[in-house]
Amino acid sequence: MKYIDEFRDGERARHIAANIAAEVRPDTTYSFMEFCGGHTHAISRYGIADMLPPNVRMIHGPGCPVCVLPIGRVDLAIRLALERGVMLCTYGDTMRVPASDGLSLIKAKARGADVRMVYSASDALKLAEQHPEREVVFFAIGFETTTPPTALILRDAKARGVNNFSVLCCHVLTPSAITHILESAEVRTLGTVPIDGFVGPAHVSIVIGSEPYEHFAQEYRKPVVITGFEPMDVMQGILMLVRQINQGRAEVENEFSRAVTREGNLAAQNLVSQIFELRESFEWRGLGEVPYSALKIRPAYAQWDAEVKYDLKYQSVPDHKQCECGAILRGVKRPQDCKLFGTVCTPESPMGSCMVSNEGACAAHYSYGRFRDAAQADRAQAAINIVAI
Image (cartoon, rainbow, N blue to C red; front, top):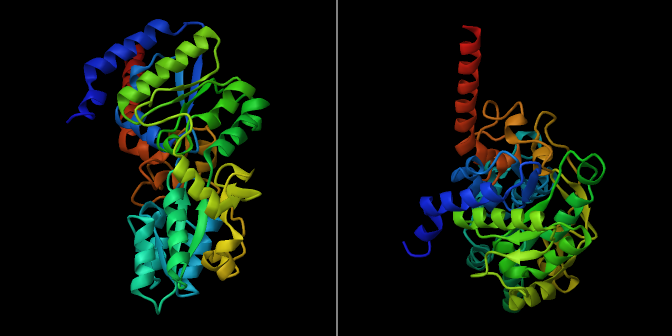
């Protein structure tokens, strides 16, 4: 398949892996955070971590929009569906995010709430037009990638006078989260999360361009390589990061040049700025309150803002005490460090948000990495047995 198979060629992958192994310095540790959940999934699915030298470490970041959605925001959506009787529409993964009292949107649906999965934001607006007697709310989540479609339906709802439609906006911003991580105690003070560079997100960068990441290279001296999601993309991006570290550079490089430009999609950016404005603060699961890290609907569209329309008051809710999603999203822990992983918490019955979406670190490791863990454990036990004999 043209433009797919070329980026999944095993021989080329081994060639890039050999270049990485040849260029890493044995006395240097390279720690790179892949921010986007798509990269986390690719690294696990294609066994990329196994092809890297031991001193090149990949750290999972908070780049899965479902994973960083706090419990309190899901609770708002559930209350709208159960208590206000609205038709609540959202994307598929969002329906399974654990909320308070053992609920999720899909469990609320089982209790009689009218919760519907949609494939696009425009599907929700169509439902509102088809059911003028019902109040329809679109539970909008995601990074900069999914924000323009939400802006488009808000503009269209106002233009067409669809007054029974509104949006519960939970769109968040990538650069603010990266800044928050770099300023965190784990990175700056405690040093428990060493970050030498970032694998920059692909889809997000198509919208916002590469320019917003230049701040991290200039101010924090952290190189960023924007990378596509195919295994060749990811491995080439890692090689480019290794070379920057070895050469003492901290720049923004664009491996995904076939889709990403420096300025990004200006039409999409202009549309978003017309409909949305910055929130002063927004809670992220695992990161806590992050200033200027999310969007809210402008007052001119307040009639279609579910928070205003239903006078919603946000209340923070702590995660399950034994769930390590927060630490995993910050890069402090790995999925296999969680006591619930693979036992109580599985994709079929997730206890935490990282196990819900296939872009979540726990779900990706459950699907691919746990077999490698089991094989390594078996080899370690065999070695112990040999020594004992």
